[in-house]
Image (cartoon, rainbow, N blue to C red; front, side, top):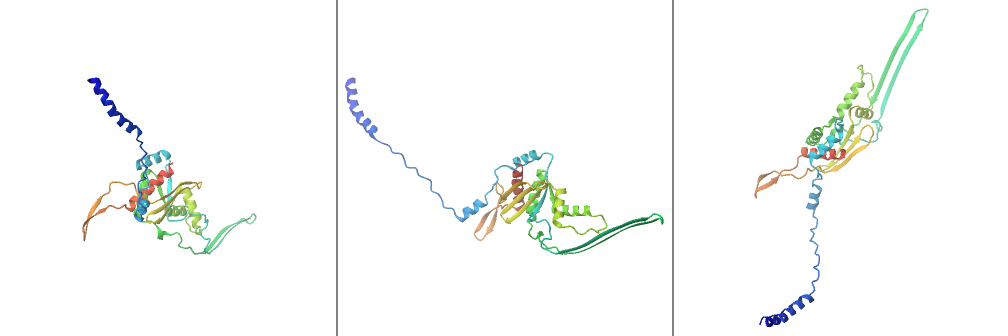
Length: 272
């Protein structure tokens, strides 16, 4: 009986096996994910997205390792051009009259000794208000940038201060010296009191350009274009009462934080 049962089962399984073997499975078509068209809001979020990936701790550590005990002195030009103009009188008139003479002589027989000196100076000058402080960045922005540079060990130099210090050192005390050319005095001050020059330009409220130059050689140490937005962090928020109920308000990035971020990105570029 067992042999008969086995014989009867084989024909029943054969059709099923033949059908499975003859069935073909075509490859499933590849479907690309649907792409959302970019809106103006998406483009704005992309422009304001953070640009720094490296942590602040790593940037400061690499910068301090690169410079060690020779931390640079950095002078900052806030929205002030550092161009190839040598004299600040190129487009203005300046009249200067200066004369200096000395007289020495001796008459041996009469024992007369003649010595004398005279000096005369006159000038008429007109200086334009070009490159003055009318377009300087906000104080909070400068404060954040300077504080972050100082934390890294950089000595931040004020341009106006070193120019007055340098000019005062050249003055003998009799105030007979003619007023110096501003551009030449500026270059002398930078050479004596700074190692690097940071030229900071604020193009728009969310667009900044920074260039770092070696004062002695003129070499470009770093160039940076950034929106100054720090990496995303846990945002604090508050609830504001409106006509339609309470509305959740996210904390915005302050100018001081933008200044700190720009300093960190600049330090990262300089230490590479």
